[in-house]
Length: 140
Image 1 (cartoon, rainbow, N blue to C red):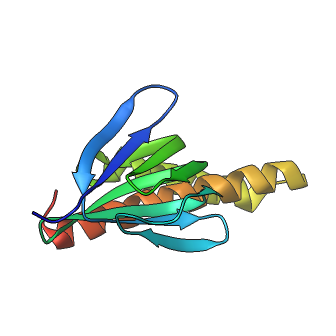
Image 2: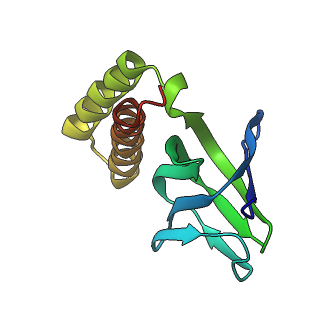
């Protein structure tokens, strides 16, 4: 039996996932990183994007937005501001959020409005990409 890595994804509201996996790839604030069992411990801030994990030859996707990752040799803990499994993402809701963000960007008067609208747009696009990736992998 091959060695596994425990992946736990938690938001302020609930636990999204707790599962033994073979590999984790996550969107770090400074770029994507990958983790295999027995990895050296480290902490990383998370960006907006797709976290993916591999288990028994299948790839699964989870949208994450902000937060932190803690890696130990046996476990990856994701403390995310927001996280959704690809299968749980409502693409229509994400598309509407994208439209609203684009409208706010067009009429943003202040830098703070622009920054918020831009972050909202990035989150909605990342959600849709995550859902599409999950569908292509056959995990939705």
